Amino acid sequence: MLVLSRKKLESIVIDEQIIITVVEIRGDKVRLGIEAPRDISIKRCELEDRHQSEPPVAGEAAVNGGQPVPDH
Image (cartoon, rainbow, N blue to C red; front, side, top):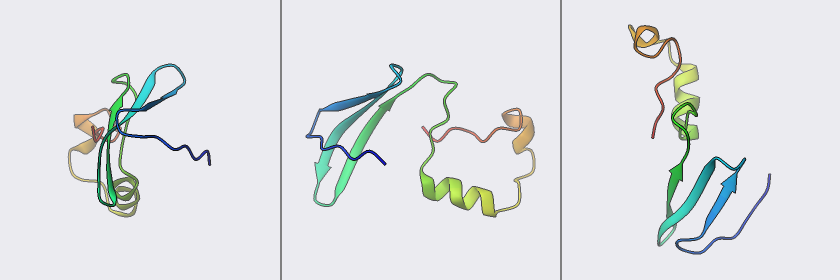
């Protein structure tokens, strides 16, 4: 795992196509802005973990070609 320090409004770039910016720091919470191509799925880990442990939702495959709907 790479660990970086960033201040408010500073960014990191991943693979020249994903930009993550620290939008706000409030107490123990950090708000991040993520810019990425639409074909890249972005999900919070806790939602992905829960999604994998639950049975599929009826109709989910038809909505997005069998792929999870991006959480962004």
